[in-house]
Length: 256
Image 1 (cartoon, rainbow, N blue to C red):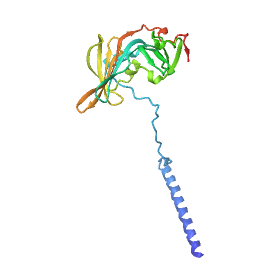
Image 2 (tube, one colour; image 1 turned 60 degrees about the vertical axis):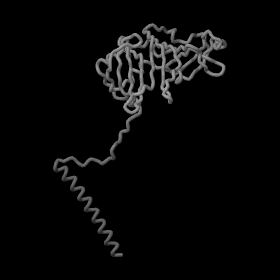
Image 3 (cartoon, rainbow, N blue to C red; image 1 turned 180 degrees about the horizontal axis):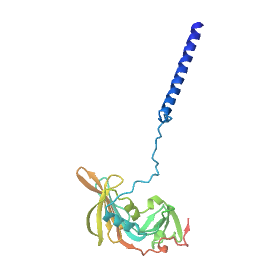
Protein backbone atom coordinates (compact mmCIF):
# COMPACT_ATOMS: atom_id res chain seq x y z
CA UNK A 1 0.00 0.00 0.00
CA UNK A 2 2.79 2.40 0.95
CA UNK A 3 4.74 1.48 -2.20
CA UNK A 4 1.70 2.21 -4.36
CA UNK A 5 1.22 5.62 -2.72
CA UNK A 6 4.89 6.51 -3.28
CA UNK A 7 4.61 5.52 -6.98
CA UNK A 8 1.57 7.78 -7.51
CA UNK A 9 3.34 10.73 -5.85
CA UNK A 10 6.36 10.22 -8.11
CA UNK A 11 4.18 10.27 -11.28
CA UNK A 12 2.42 13.47 -10.18
CA UNK A 13 5.80 15.09 -9.53
CA UNK A 14 7.01 14.21 -13.05
CA UNK A 15 3.87 15.76 -14.63
CA UNK A 16 4.34 18.97 -12.64
CA UNK A 17 7.97 19.24 -13.77
CA UNK A 18 7.01 18.68 -17.45
CA UNK A 19 4.29 21.35 -17.37
CA UNK A 20 6.64 23.77 -15.60
CA UNK A 21 9.35 23.20 -18.21
CA UNK A 22 6.86 23.77 -21.07
CA UNK A 23 5.59 26.99 -19.50
CA UNK A 24 9.14 28.22 -18.85
CA UNK A 25 10.04 27.47 -22.50
CA UNK A 26 7.07 29.52 -23.78
CA UNK A 27 7.99 32.43 -21.49
CA UNK A 28 11.62 32.25 -22.56
CA UNK A 29 10.65 32.38 -26.30
CA UNK A 30 8.40 35.38 -25.70
CA UNK A 31 11.07 37.21 -23.67
CA UNK A 32 13.63 36.55 -26.40
CA UNK A 33 11.25 38.02 -29.02
CA UNK A 34 10.84 34.69 -30.84
CA UNK A 35 7.52 33.57 -32.31
CA UNK A 36 5.74 30.79 -30.53
CA UNK A 37 5.73 27.35 -32.10
CA UNK A 38 2.97 27.10 -34.73
CA UNK A 39 0.26 24.53 -34.29
CA UNK A 40 1.11 21.35 -36.09
CA UNK A 41 -1.54 20.38 -38.65
CA UNK A 42 -1.43 17.60 -41.25
CA UNK A 43 -0.32 18.75 -44.73
CA UNK A 44 -3.06 19.59 -47.25
CA UNK A 45 -2.92 17.54 -50.45
CA UNK A 46 -4.44 19.31 -53.46
CA UNK A 47 -5.90 16.89 -56.00
CA UNK A 48 -6.19 18.36 -59.53
CA UNK A 49 -9.76 18.64 -60.75
CA UNK A 50 -10.78 16.72 -63.88
CA UNK A 51 -12.34 19.93 -65.15
CA UNK A 52 -9.07 21.88 -64.96
CA UNK A 53 -8.38 23.43 -68.34
CA UNK A 54 -5.15 22.31 -70.04
CA UNK A 55 -2.32 24.77 -70.33
CA UNK A 56 -2.60 26.91 -73.47
CA UNK A 57 -0.66 25.64 -76.48
CA UNK A 58 2.09 27.95 -77.71
CA UNK A 59 2.48 27.85 -81.50
CA UNK A 60 4.93 29.57 -83.78
CA UNK A 61 3.79 32.93 -85.14
CA UNK A 62 2.98 31.74 -88.68
CA UNK A 63 1.04 28.67 -87.51
CA UNK A 64 -0.80 30.65 -84.81
CA UNK A 65 -1.87 33.31 -87.33
CA UNK A 66 -3.28 30.63 -89.64
CA UNK A 67 -5.10 28.87 -86.79
CA UNK A 68 -6.67 32.16 -85.62
CA UNK A 69 -7.88 32.79 -89.16
CA UNK A 70 -9.49 29.35 -89.31
CA UNK A 71 -11.18 29.67 -85.92
CA UNK A 72 -12.98 32.78 -87.18
CA UNK A 73 -14.78 30.70 -89.85
CA UNK A 74 -18.24 29.58 -88.72
CA UNK A 75 -19.87 29.16 -92.13
CA UNK A 76 -18.62 26.66 -94.69
CA UNK A 77 -19.28 23.57 -96.80
CA UNK A 78 -16.99 20.66 -97.66
CA UNK A 79 -17.00 17.21 -99.26
CA UNK A 80 -15.74 14.50 -96.90
CA UNK A 81 -13.83 11.33 -97.74
CA UNK A 82 -11.83 9.00 -95.48
CA UNK A 83 -9.55 5.97 -95.76
CA UNK A 84 -8.47 3.82 -92.80
CA UNK A 85 -5.84 1.06 -92.82
CA UNK A 86 -7.25 -2.31 -91.78
CA UNK A 87 -5.52 -5.30 -90.13
CA UNK A 88 -4.50 -6.66 -93.53
CA UNK A 89 -2.70 -3.49 -94.58
CA UNK A 90 -5.41 -2.45 -97.01
CA UNK A 91 -7.41 0.78 -96.84
CA UNK A 92 -11.16 0.82 -96.23
CA UNK A 93 -13.12 3.83 -97.46
CA UNK A 94 -15.79 5.44 -95.30
CA UNK A 95 -19.11 6.60 -96.71
CA UNK A 96 -18.69 9.94 -98.45
CA UNK A 97 -20.91 12.95 -97.80
CA UNK A 98 -21.18 16.71 -98.18
CA UNK A 99 -21.37 18.80 -95.03
CA UNK A 100 -23.01 22.20 -94.62
CA UNK A 101 -22.02 23.95 -91.40
CA UNK A 102 -23.18 27.21 -89.86
CA UNK A 103 -22.68 28.35 -86.26
CA UNK A 104 -23.19 25.03 -84.47
CA UNK A 105 -25.77 23.56 -86.86
CA UNK A 106 -24.99 21.23 -89.73
CA UNK A 107 -26.49 19.10 -92.48
CA UNK A 108 -24.88 15.95 -93.87
CA UNK A 109 -25.93 14.87 -97.35
CA UNK A 110 -25.08 11.31 -98.40
CA UNK A 111 -24.80 10.41 -102.08
CA UNK A 112 -27.16 7.48 -101.53
CA UNK A 113 -29.68 6.53 -98.80
CA UNK A 114 -28.33 4.95 -95.60
CA UNK A 115 -30.18 2.21 -93.74
CA UNK A 116 -31.65 3.19 -90.34
CA UNK A 117 -33.39 -0.12 -89.72
CA UNK A 118 -35.06 -2.83 -91.80
CA UNK A 119 -37.84 -0.52 -92.96
CA UNK A 120 -36.48 3.05 -92.99
CA UNK A 121 -33.67 4.88 -94.75
CA UNK A 122 -32.25 8.40 -94.72
CA UNK A 123 -29.95 10.43 -96.94
CA UNK A 124 -29.80 13.73 -95.02
CA UNK A 125 -28.88 14.30 -91.38
CA UNK A 126 -29.59 17.52 -89.49
CA UNK A 127 -27.29 18.01 -86.50
CA UNK A 128 -27.37 20.33 -83.50
CA UNK A 129 -23.94 20.22 -81.83
CA UNK A 130 -25.04 22.09 -78.69
CA UNK A 131 -27.99 19.76 -78.04
CA UNK A 132 -26.13 16.69 -79.38
CA UNK A 133 -29.05 15.68 -81.55
CA UNK A 134 -29.19 14.10 -84.99
CA UNK A 135 -32.32 13.80 -87.10
CA UNK A 136 -32.48 12.01 -90.44
CA UNK A 137 -34.80 12.44 -93.41
CA UNK A 138 -35.11 10.58 -96.68
CA UNK A 139 -35.83 12.88 -99.62
CA UNK A 140 -33.81 11.23 -102.36
CA UNK A 141 -35.64 10.39 -105.56
CA UNK A 142 -35.32 6.65 -105.03
CA UNK A 143 -37.72 3.85 -104.13
CA UNK A 144 -36.03 3.55 -100.72
CA UNK A 145 -37.47 6.92 -99.70
CA UNK A 146 -40.94 6.20 -101.01
CA UNK A 147 -42.59 5.71 -97.59
CA UNK A 148 -40.63 8.43 -95.76
CA UNK A 149 -42.16 11.56 -97.26
CA UNK A 150 -42.33 14.38 -94.65
CA UNK A 151 -41.05 12.00 -91.94
CA UNK A 152 -38.01 12.55 -89.74
CA UNK A 153 -36.21 9.97 -87.60
CA UNK A 154 -33.97 10.28 -84.55
CA UNK A 155 -30.45 8.98 -85.20
CA UNK A 156 -27.40 8.15 -83.09
CA UNK A 157 -25.66 11.50 -82.63
CA UNK A 158 -22.20 10.06 -81.88
CA UNK A 159 -22.34 7.88 -84.96
CA UNK A 160 -23.46 10.68 -87.27
CA UNK A 161 -21.37 13.48 -85.78
CA UNK A 162 -19.02 14.75 -88.51
CA UNK A 163 -15.64 16.40 -88.14
CA UNK A 164 -15.90 20.08 -87.22
CA UNK A 165 -12.87 21.80 -88.73
CA UNK A 166 -12.57 24.07 -85.70
CA UNK A 167 -12.00 21.00 -83.50
CA UNK A 168 -9.06 19.93 -85.67
CA UNK A 169 -7.45 23.32 -85.12
CA UNK A 170 -8.04 23.09 -81.36
CA UNK A 171 -6.30 19.69 -81.27
CA UNK A 172 -3.00 20.82 -82.81
CA UNK A 173 -0.14 19.67 -80.56
CA UNK A 174 2.23 22.07 -78.81
CA UNK A 175 5.18 20.62 -80.76
CA UNK A 176 3.66 21.66 -84.11
CA UNK A 177 6.17 22.60 -86.77
CA UNK A 178 5.84 23.77 -90.33
CA UNK A 179 6.92 21.20 -92.92
CA UNK A 180 6.29 23.06 -96.15
CA UNK A 181 3.85 25.07 -98.25
CA UNK A 182 2.24 23.31 -101.21
CA UNK A 183 -0.97 22.69 -103.12
CA UNK A 184 -3.93 20.50 -102.19
CA UNK A 185 -7.28 20.41 -104.00
CA UNK A 186 -5.96 23.28 -106.14
CA UNK A 187 -5.53 25.46 -103.06
CA UNK A 188 -2.40 26.77 -101.33
CA UNK A 189 -1.85 24.94 -98.02
CA UNK A 190 0.63 24.97 -95.16
CA UNK A 191 1.45 21.45 -94.03
CA UNK A 192 2.26 21.15 -90.33
CA UNK A 193 3.27 18.13 -88.23
CA UNK A 194 2.83 17.42 -84.51
CA UNK A 195 2.09 14.71 -81.94
CA UNK A 196 -1.62 14.19 -81.36
CA UNK A 197 -3.31 13.26 -78.07
CA UNK A 198 -2.52 9.58 -78.72
CA UNK A 199 1.17 10.30 -79.15
CA UNK A 200 0.99 9.53 -82.88
CA UNK A 201 2.44 11.68 -85.62
CA UNK A 202 -0.19 13.76 -87.37
CA UNK A 203 -0.02 16.06 -90.38
CA UNK A 204 -2.56 18.76 -91.14
CA UNK A 205 -2.81 20.59 -94.46
CA UNK A 206 -4.31 24.03 -93.76
CA UNK A 207 -5.69 26.34 -96.44
CA UNK A 208 -3.58 29.51 -96.32
CA UNK A 209 -6.45 31.80 -97.35
CA UNK A 210 -9.20 30.72 -94.94
CA UNK A 211 -7.16 28.87 -92.32
CA UNK A 212 -9.35 25.76 -92.57
CA UNK A 213 -7.93 22.20 -92.62
CA UNK A 214 -8.26 20.42 -95.96
CA UNK A 215 -6.52 17.15 -95.08
CA UNK A 216 -5.65 15.25 -91.89
CA UNK A 217 -3.21 12.33 -91.89
CA UNK A 218 -2.39 10.10 -88.90
CA UNK A 219 0.65 7.80 -88.88
CA UNK A 220 1.62 4.71 -86.87
CA UNK A 221 5.25 3.97 -86.11
CA UNK A 222 6.54 0.56 -87.21
CA UNK A 223 10.22 0.42 -86.37
CA UNK A 224 11.89 3.34 -88.11
CA UNK A 225 9.01 3.70 -90.58
CA UNK A 226 5.85 5.81 -90.29
CA UNK A 227 2.84 4.00 -91.80
CA UNK A 228 -0.23 5.98 -92.86
CA UNK A 229 -3.06 4.85 -90.57
CA UNK A 230 -5.86 7.20 -91.61
CA UNK A 231 -6.45 10.02 -94.06
CA UNK A 232 -9.46 12.38 -93.95
CA UNK A 233 -10.00 14.96 -96.68
CA UNK A 234 -12.23 18.05 -96.74
CA UNK A 235 -12.38 19.14 -100.37
CA UNK A 236 -14.50 21.43 -102.58
CA UNK A 237 -14.59 23.90 -99.71
CA UNK A 238 -16.90 26.90 -99.90
CA UNK A 239 -16.92 29.60 -97.21
CA UNK A 240 -19.58 32.11 -96.04
CA UNK A 241 -22.35 31.01 -98.39
CA UNK A 242 -24.40 28.72 -96.11
CA UNK A 243 -27.85 30.05 -95.17
CA UNK A 244 -30.00 29.13 -92.17
CA UNK A 245 -32.36 27.11 -94.37
CA UNK A 246 -29.41 24.93 -95.44
CA UNK A 247 -28.89 23.63 -91.89
CA UNK A 248 -32.46 23.74 -90.52
CA UNK A 249 -34.98 20.90 -90.71
CA UNK A 250 -38.00 22.05 -92.77
CA UNK A 251 -41.19 22.52 -90.78
CA UNK A 252 -43.17 20.02 -92.87
CA UNK A 253 -41.14 17.10 -91.47
CA UNK A 254 -42.72 15.30 -88.50
CA UNK A 255 -40.47 13.46 -86.04
CA UNK A 256 -41.57 9.82 -85.79
